Image 1: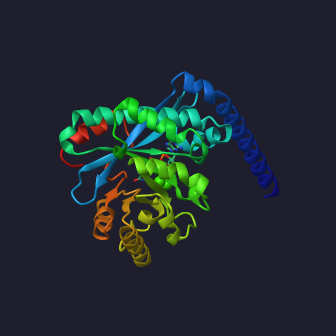
Image 2: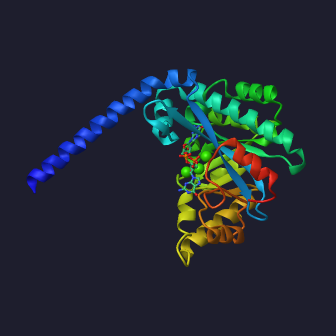
Length: 283
Ligand code: C2E
Ligand code: CA
Ligand code: CA
Ligand code: CA
C-alpha cells in the first residue's frame, strides 16, 4: 500500500509538473496569441423567463490554441489577469462583442433592444482608461450605451472604495448597465448593494443547482425568493445562471426572476446561433 501511495504521489508530482509546464507555456504564448487572432467569442442567449424571448447574449471568450485545441476561459483568464494581458484581451472582447451586437441590432431593429453582456476582470476595473476606452468602443460601433451590460463579480467589489466605484458610476450614468456576477458566492453585505451602481444581479449557478432535485430544496427556494424580493425592492433585475431544465426555469419564473441563461435554452455558440434565435420568436 505504501509503495502504491508513493507511486501515487510521484504521479501527482508529475501531473503537477506537467500542469506547471503547460501553465508556463500558455502564459508565455498569450501575447502572441492575441496578435495572431487565436481568440474567439461564443455567445450565450439571455432569455426573458416570462415569454421565452431573447433579451440579449453574454460574450464568453475562448482560445483556439494551435497545440491544445480550444481552451475555456478558466484555463487562461487567470493567467492573463496575472500578466496584465487581460487589459488588451478584455479590450478586444469588448470591441468585438459590441461590434457583433450592433450588427444584430441593425438587422432586428423591430425586436426591441438586444443587450450584450461582457465580463470585466478586476484588473480591467482598476485600469485608468476603462471609461474612456468603453466610450470610444461604443462611439465607433454605433451601439447605444443602454445596450451594453458590463458584468463584474461580487468578489471584485467587496470592500470597494469610492476610487474603484467611480468609473463604474460614470459608466452607469451614461446608461451602461452594471451586473453583479456570481451573486451569492461572495460575502457582501446585502445592504451594501445600495452603494453599488449595479442594476442587475446575476444569481450564481449554485442556487439553480439546488433546484435540480425533485422536490427542490425548500431552503434554496426561500433564499432565492428572498434575494429576488430584495433585488426588486432596490429596482434591480435578477438574472439566473445555469438553468439546465424546464422544471428549473418554471420554478425560477414563479419565484419572480426576470431573465435566465443556461443549457436548457442554449449552450454558448457561434454568433449565427443568436442570429437565428432572433429570427425565431422564442427560444
Ligand atoms: P461566468 O461569467 O459565470 O459565465 C458563465 C459560465 O457558465 C460560462 O462558462 C458558461 O459556459 C457556463 N454555463 C452557462 N450555462 C450553463 C449551464 O446551464 N450549466 C453549466 N454547468 N454551465 C453553464 P465559461 O464560458 O467556461 O466561462 C467561465 C468564466 O470565465 C465566466 O464565468 C467568466 O467569469 C470568465 N470569462 C469568460 N469570458 C470572459 C471574458 O471575456 N473576460 C473575462 N474577464 N472573463 C471571462
Ligand atoms: Ca459572467
Ligand atoms: Ca456568472
Ligand atoms: Ca459563475
